[in-house]
Image (cartoon, rainbow, N blue to C red):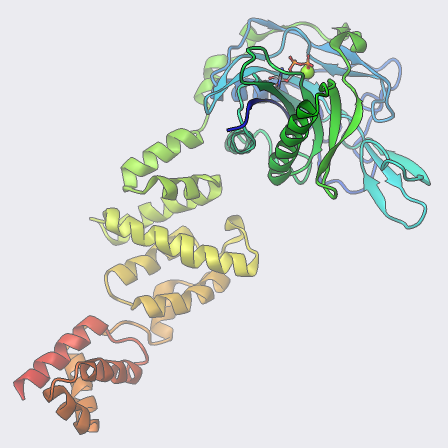
Length: 496
Ligand code: ADP
Ligand code: MG
């Protein structure tokens, strides 16, 4: 065991997917490729313009606060955070300082300190001289000469939620778990798409270590520029190691901001840590203080959807799923909706459907359908296979109207065409033959064709029966019910 104890606190930003920006009516469209399209004098920071608060952005944060059991104070306000940077046209960011929208809260045992609302900055793009590559970075790449820098204000003024945890996190894996759990909740609430690779969710990690013999926390280092869950993990691991090596060499840790370099897999020093007083925070005088009791908090609370944790618990009870199976389904709101729709359709085909049938449905969905989707790169929302058609196909397997082999064969076709499974089964002659009289006729033909195998069976050769079932299956183009065929063969052979 290491003689140091790690301490980690996260600051997570998420872009809210409101229709318009935080303080003006410019469109909030993260996918707009053409620079400086969704802009107006307000988000360009022109003198004399006035901000107007976006109510749905405030409501989005209140919902997040409710989902995480945070406390909603009666009053809140916005403040100006002053600093000069080319991506900040007013030279101040409207943010919140001492009266955030949410105090406290908890997620997976990690205490939250606060959640507040602010505006996003513009995006800077730096063009390198040796090629036409334009990199989207806050600062131009270190040590590289830059031919030109551009500012795209499409993102300037987009509502940005910031959540700050207490330093309760103990290791890299726990930090990743926390960030993933938060991402899922933001997606369930439909307040943010929270895609890290797209910059819709940004994680900053505050990291320190202290000796086991020492009560007080060590000096923390803040790591920025983390663009994936993998990078959250790697940056924390790297930084813990770096700090430990430094302490062992007798050095002291400097309080600073470091950036994660994804190529070098290292953190690199960016600047010494700024303090709150460096920002000269003061109240945003162009916006009225917020009286949160004037929001319909009860209605907002009632509008919250079932959240991942509750949903997993319900799935386990309602469908008798394993906890890991519930995790798989709940990881995507659309997937679990699809599954539950398919279950209710299954119940119309099989009124007394039970846990074993739900398992079959789960297996077909997570193995076969997911497999085909992965091969084709389709997402669940693009799927032409409706929950009803999917449930019907699974019901046909359960009631032995088609063999599982035939079901797996036609699944890709239904997936692509959206056809009715029973139509396709009819058209392709795949209906499973389970009728004993029909199968007896086929069995007799096979027995006449292979007299030697009959003799083998009589001599007790165990694979003779399997051989004949196989031949009958081939004759029926895979549509025979294998168990019934086996039974029929046995009956005939044992009687001769
Ligand atoms: P600052 O004033 O420098 O912004 P805060 O106290 O506001 O620092 O904390 C910012 C983040 O750093 C929070 O997520 C908090 O949990 C975390 N944090 C605070 N102290 C430590 C520490 N010693 N080690 C690791 N994280 C810390
Ligand atoms: Mg801070």
